[in-house]
Amino acid sequence: MHINGIMFQYFEWFLQDDGSLWKKLKDDAQHLKEIGVTSVWLPPPTKGTGSNDVGYGAYDLYDLGEFDQKGTVRTKYGTKQELHEAIDALHEIGIAVYADVVINHKGGGDELQTFTVVEVNPDDRNEIISEPFEIESYTSFTFPGRDNKYSDFKWSWEHFSATDYNHRDPKDAIYVIEGENKGVDPEDRSVGQQFGNFDFLLYNDIDFKHPDVREELKRWISWFIKETGIDGFRLDAIKHISDWFIKEFIEHVRGEFGDQYYIVGEYSYYDDMDMDPFLQNVEHRIDLFDVALHYHFRICSLDGPGYDMSTIFDDTIVAKYPQLAVTYVNNHDSHLHDDDLYVLDWFKPLAYALILLRKDGYPCIFFGDYYGIEGPDAREGQQWIIDQLLDIRRDFAYGDQEDYFDHESIVGWIRRGDENNPDGCVVVMSNDEAGEKRIFVGTDYAGSAWYDKLGHIEDDIIVEEDGHANFPVNEGSVSVYLKRV
Ligand code: CA
Image (cartoon, rainbow, N blue to C red; front, side):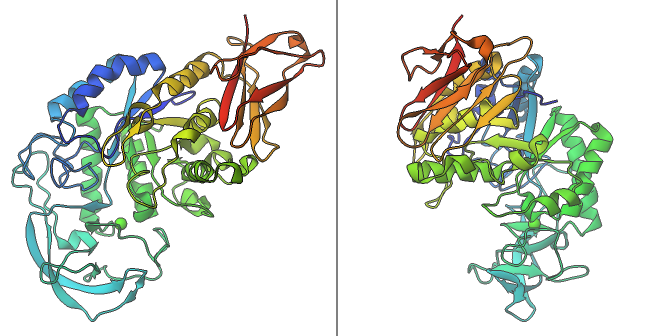
């Protein structure tokens, strides 16, 4: 369903807590259609720990901005009614809607409970550093504001595997919960293996080994899909979720909503990560955000000329699993911390050309790159350049692709076009000084003139008798050449 699709991540971390996003999205639907967007990724529409929660502090998955809970009826993005209106507006013009789904953990519990834990070493969660002892923590979720509507399931400590809060001793620590079929398991390979076992991320970590949990989460996703009419979802934090449950969850959803139901996962890692075992365990049935390519963009944007552009696609998801890759430049997480993963502004035109004008990958445009980022480290959006690249993608980026990733700083490729768009386009970029790339356009094109649609290079390029031409590019820049008609 995403052949030549374009996803748009319609949020960034530092949006104002004013409940206006669903209205903004509804009003923006027609514009998104015009620039070629085929799907929109919504932030978690579920109630978090407060109205200012970005959505990843999942409190009540059945509260889409409907109930007075955590001090607010609306979520950060608006009311349930406004959510419905935004989804309807997108559906009316044929844009698919994907929602962010947070099932790894729950925050904002309603009542304290007392239960037995062991403390583990945060750097090696298989190492127990205490005797079993009792803690008090907010693991009881009764959802008083919802009063059993949609589900009467109440979460309790037995439904969680670990937590980071002890009411009797509010220090930083990770507590693994003890009990039947619970506790530290050094043999567990179903989650990321960083820190020994990366099951726990934050808040109260959901225990998928508990049968009532699995049943409730499957019941919830069925309700959620029917209630919202969403066409797919992004599964948050899958590195921290047992892969056998991800497989079970996917099978449940596709069994009910069809084999093509769209699911993409966020498996965050940096480099040297082998995704084969995970993908085998989930039978290659989930798309993945191309974290490796994003990381390469980040390093190149930092290092500039020091980065070898010929390696930018090495070991990326899009190179290894082109059918499963969602390629992106930045996302809501990219600019949160000092050691952040933000792809710097100068490199964004190059990075967006690398995801929008190539054959493989399902590209995702980040709200913050397009409209800008608010908050302490505000940035301007780059709507103009992204719009230009989207126009080129729509009209010219078709057909066979020949790569010229044969130089450490100046790389390029040609798209040869197809029946409906016969001339294709030539892309050349440099992360270092200005230069040119000699590219074979075709002897049929001898004498034809090509111009830089992005306007960086002023002179036309004339294809030589042998079908080649030297396509120039400026320092730290990208040019996209189209045939003059
Ligand atoms: Ca977990």
